[in-house]
Image (cartoon, rainbow, N blue to C red; front, top):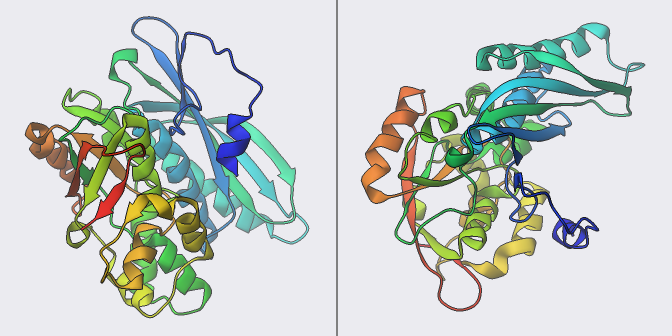
Length: 327
């Protein structure tokens, strides 16, 4: 539905300095200021996925800033987007949410310079994130090359853990893993911009691994193959999904793009649920030349992404539509 709405947008003539807009469903807009500077602008906000208010603020902030890093940029400041049911939530809870977001921005080295707040029926929190990047170092989701390796920086399964939490089935260790990964900044993206062998970057969020990878395939006019056994997965998420726990969004994701995904005939149902699992503040998905793989993995591991892994490769698209094959 979103694709149809965007396609019907009345704005047909775009300024030449708008280097990245809505054309390929990229992570952020990028506008060139001059030959050496471009500004990145993005926003993201949502309702709580965890019970702890400070964790909610941290996760929402890291998720919003991720889009700047996914463009190869670095954030410079943020604006808060706040909707709170002030008659229902105690002031200290609202304060904890905002403090959690501010702590992640401090970790990124940026201020929250303003924002907007409303009284809303449900808690909503997020950021408008502003960043900068050199125009010649922008990493979009449409630059992958035939033969590129595909690297994922964070393990999958956050949506499944969230579903288990809502059912009261998530262990304390599982909750810790969920917060550990969702509150971790994808700051490595800014360093990957310096590597000429890195051709495309996106982050894995609400459309799941398959959905965001297909966006790269379509933008780059390529197909991709993912080796399921090489995917980094959160162990407790595997346990829960094999027991039948998944989000409703996973099924909607498959309905949206499943026609372009080839799963092995004998693949269990949980394979489908894992590749469509909506991630909050998920990992960076990187397309790079094979010769650049070691440098990309080293950059991720230097920033604490110890689960970063090569998960597949890009190839020429056979036929009209790019496809994703799961081996």
